[in-house]
Length: 473
Image (cartoon, helix red, strand yellow):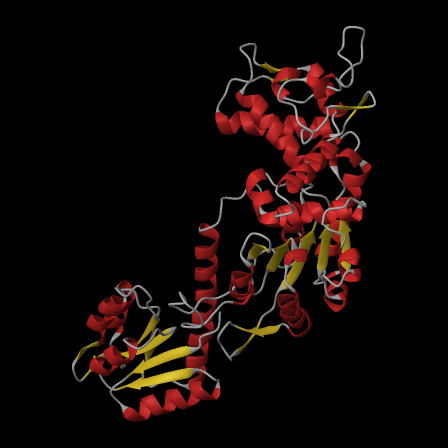
């Protein structure tokens, strides 16, 4: 975070002029005040990032005003200024919340040091506030698995992490793309910097720009204060842009500039802000096809795809399911505090036989439910997993068409069998979504509400079906 607005409260006019002239050369806005009352007037008109406050003023003591400033909801960092021999006062001011103390007379170089310290402190403070407002992250975030594809993925992560190259992570929903991004950051030389993430599909389009680049006070309705965006918070670290394919074309253009120039302006502002950030993006869509359809900028795609990383689907990670299942099972046993001994052997077989269209996320959900529903013997059996076994045709089975003859069945309900063969869960999902869309007469908003899913999720699904040749319009 850069220091952009400073209020200088000092009795000596020559000192105010000296410091203000130096700060303005650095393109920092400065308000000059000769008294506490003048400072009150300026602070009533707006907020400041930093205050340089003299110990002695014509209408009061700086230490008393410091206590008043610290009661403000949007308070600046305060650097007290005092004469030689006022060490005790300096200690008292620091105890009352002063950020630092300058002994007069001081040089421009000392002011520069104060600015750098204030910027670093503000960066740490803002990042901590942002992270504490987010959901707690899973501390057990290692990439588990011993399959060849998982081993190669870990090797690629370690190799790429040591560079500053932009990375594009691609893979199906639920494969762990965010986990890969975390590993990239954790193994990089930026590991001590912040890791800031943004799901581009989780916010309304008109808010994404403000989240990315921040905004100035009054730039739009509700912007009551200046706010730093995710790029500023990620300075010195990594920013992870999940579902990058959901960015609108105008925002894609602005993101392209950040990738090329490492600079931007906040919404409603004209000050150019430079950042040192490593960009890691992720998508579950094939961006090459989005480029061909003019839904995604080709130049941005090339900028993002410097190092492509493919995260394999769980069905491609042969042998990883038992290892992952045991690890997740133990995690949920600890989290829920239930007396579960583990997975029964037949449950391991059932897990390996499943196709896992929802990948690792589906596996986690299945095992958490199973741990909660575990029986008295302490072992998780296949019935607690809730996985539908493939139907077997036998002499006592009903005919294939019997499902359609049941009372209440409709042509919109997905069929369990197709020519006697098991239907994949993904096919059932597709059939259900398309039939609901037809029932809603093509209204996507109403379809999403009926299915209880996000409109962006519905759009992504329909785009997938369209690529498969399904009529979705």
